[in-house]
Length: 345
Image (tube, rainbow, N blue to C red):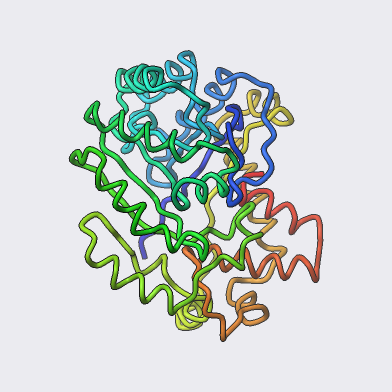
């Protein structure tokens, strides 16, 4: 059996988010005080380790919470990518969430600067049209800002990506939103897809907004007529369908990726460690945390709703939902550590 390469995700929460999405994957936002140069040095050490271990693991890195990097950070990331090229260069695309207000001319200058650093695509997450989107994103005028940014980016020849969140309160807006996106410049390489809210971060608060199987099946017929629409099977399963899939598969040893959050509390220690030492430490801690909780099959048997028709986009969403139920019954420091490691808090 071919061994899966382990993914190592390195994060630092350095960039302020200009709004507060009610479905945010990260939940409460606390910025680190360290600068991006210190983060870059830790990432560089891990990328050097990856060079010697390419068959075993791959390292990715990102600065949360937005793509609103200053020029010094753009130059640091560019230098890392030139030395350690990625299959998907970190500056090749940007997400439009959390950007501060800019005029149209300022948006153009901002995008031109990123094009000079190799940016070819922009991606927006949209939850309805106008006031509906603004409600979900926690800032008045955010829908207009995103649409203006997409329009300017398209005029500059950039490929446009869009994720349309599907919730009970956004369903009525989907045709109008899709029509608005159709009127934007359609450059090669663009894409568009629909997605329910994830069960992570603040998304756990909105189970009442989650669509069900009947709505999913109606949407599937509608999406088939969209040239840029995609509705992958793996992101449109109900809880009972996830349970059927999990129960039908042979139990295998748990595989996990590593999430390394670089913050003010650990930056000094990480800077003093080799890449190998960092990876070994996080592997040991993550294995110990996983060992303290039931397996996915056990969580499924204990907490899965076999009549549940609400739709979840990822199997991991189900595992996190069932883990929350387990933690409510059996809170322990080790289990909370697992949530800390896995959710990037």
